Image (cartoon, rainbow, N blue to C red; front, side, top):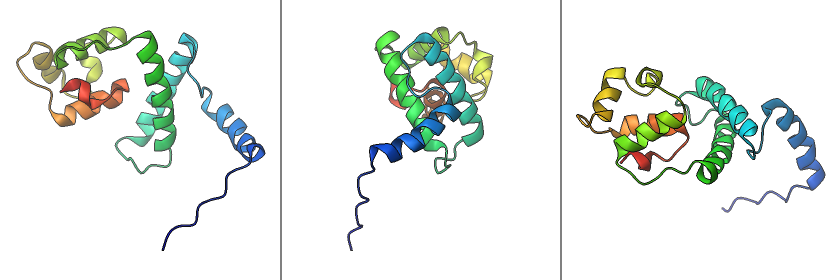
Length: 141
């Protein structure tokens, strides 16, 4: 049996939901550097709350903000095509991070091995890095 489609929401109903959402989240579009910084901070808070639970009720909010940040980065700080270790190096530089700052993704020694070409980036670490930097995991393969 096919599911009945939900009737199109009226603009006033969207507005009643949007304004409190916008107030609670703080930033809902990323057009300026200030928006970008605020969105990144909110994403970090959401990542701490959600962890790896993709079914968490806030996961959609995280995805929404990550998409806004990714669009801003694509326009203002595009990631050039490069070897995965170089992509990681570029992202770390853009975000002002050192190897130890990526402990949520992999141990510092492993990050060092990756950056020095002694080790590749595993799929699991690629997923963690992608989530950390709000990029596709494909940039690390």
